[in-house]
Length: 288
Image (cartoon, rainbow, N blue to C red):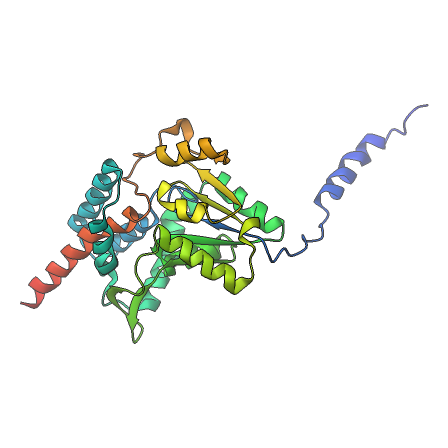
């Protein structure tokens, strides 16, 4: 039997149309969700570094202060461990470089800086992981030491459900330079996820969490489906021992010192200490 001569001409468009046809959205799955760390998990490098660099480009603090911040991040990463002194200092001064600025202005600048320097640094593979949860009807939150304003921008731009981040104290719509409730890091991330799960009615045994750092083990151990993404050496060892999935998005695994200093966990924010301290010194000198 001979096929009609137009058979193949019509088959391709029909197939393409069928594949492109809208599908019904997945049924909501309100008891399951996913939690993503940001720096080196969802995006390459330290989000607060890009943010601070964008502020420096707008003359909100000087290049010398930015260089100090970079050096602080580099030294922190080389040491490979976090001390109580680092975290205590971060609680008080990590966001000092926005002190005195209006919240609305910083958010507007954050939107610009995301477009300029962050959007192109999102790991495509990590974005796909988050999208898979959304496609399954689950909600997805960022959980990060990054300031909540910046975390909210990232979540919104990526179409995620929301974000948990470090909260800076404000008064009359202006940053005071102090933190409200401390740094969202380590066990504080786990506490935030627990509180969110209770509020949203999540079953943590059905939830997933993703991070690059062993500092986030409290959060990873809280959920039924932990994942290691671009993991540091300690997290890689834990994931191997416990059979957790490992996702590697770094090319050639030249992991840590690519282009800019990067930081894990509280180190992201600790890197801002030098910049904040320098800015305060400059202000003091200017007022004397």
